[in-house]
Length: 154
Image 1: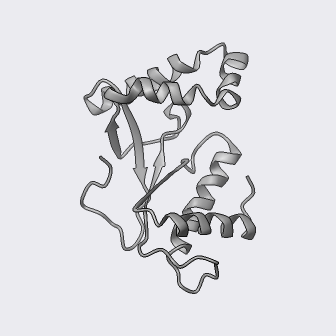
Image 2: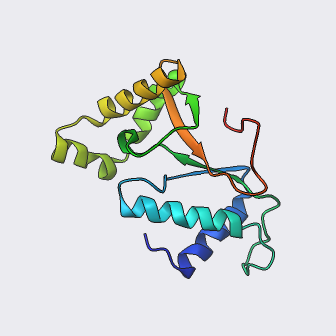
């Protein structure tokens, strides 16, 4: 993933088409350059999608979406601000994650780690922090005019 004008335009277009209330992306403190660059692109595009002067084939978003960063691999270099209880959906999360073998196969190859056990262990730790069985952790990117005093995530 390269952060350049072309990539920025594409991500702005996607956000303008969807006009989301909330966007979740990789943390800027993640371990992989592609994840860090994705985070940067989404941060920039989420703001630019709302700017009328930004040229695009799509109309500007009606609102600035709330931007959240998801947890990093194993929670390293990540200080959660909010948690979402995933106790009822942990099995679905694992099932979906296991579909991405190109992304998870390396855990087994390089670290002899089972992806489903790894995902469940991280969710268990985050659940302990949130006083539930399993949780996901997030940080909100605070930016004007969204210095919120209310919760946005479920």
